[in-house]
Length: 361
Image: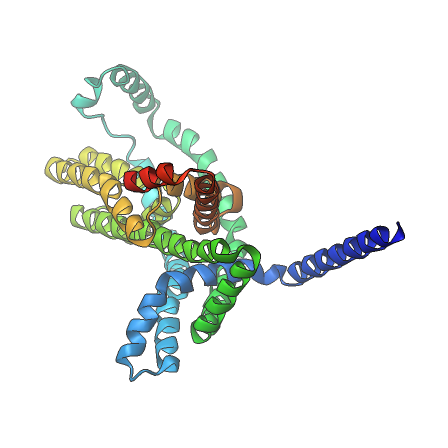
């Protein structure tokens, strides 16, 4: 009767020791976890590009890794540094522009605004009150918000520096993973196989496909929408088009979309008397704002054949739960869970039901 107790104690202490080792390791690696997760997502999503460069650089992995690292620096670190320096160099110009707009007073609303159903009369009354208050009234309403925005920007200076360091660390880790990609992939498959046999190995493969699908669907769509929207702003003569393009890119990444920037820009163009350019930018806003409805599903399906609603819920939920890195972590977790549950349910189906289910797919 004592043998089972000694085995139970041995198993318990063994499990506690493993948990302690894993917890301690994660605690030690905590400063690098964010950069490592980002690096894994980047490397998995861009692995075909690495192989493409390697095939054209005399089969030299080192040269292909160097090219990919330089590309990551150009895509992540350099734009962030340029954005910070540009904002710092043009801060006075932006402030002067806002002061000039306030000093001119609010313009009159176009006549068509009053004809809008439900909101038109209310907007007209509120705007007339703002115009009647004059420049002093506009300054009184805008100044508190301007102070809050300025204070927030100063408070984020340290965050921006930390983000730059995080990007640099991500690029370094990604370079190491590029060099040892096949070994890391083999170990991940081995780990999945050890945990769940063929199903565990399949879950690891699915995770890679989900990462690639989200990177294509979310990242490429955000880049295309931001670039096309920025071109429209530049053509219409909207000031600070480059800065607004960067804002659109971030809004597209977090699944809000570019309309939040393009629509006010179109209204601004209308108010300044450029009716033709305002109509152009309004149509451009409609095109760019709906571009993701067909572009994102098409790109996601190329990476992973998963329900679009599942991917979308993973992106939004991951963003709210884990921050920016959750855009990739959320869909991966949901995709793996969905596939494992689907496979588990399929095991309980009779052969004829399973055949019908496969035919339905």
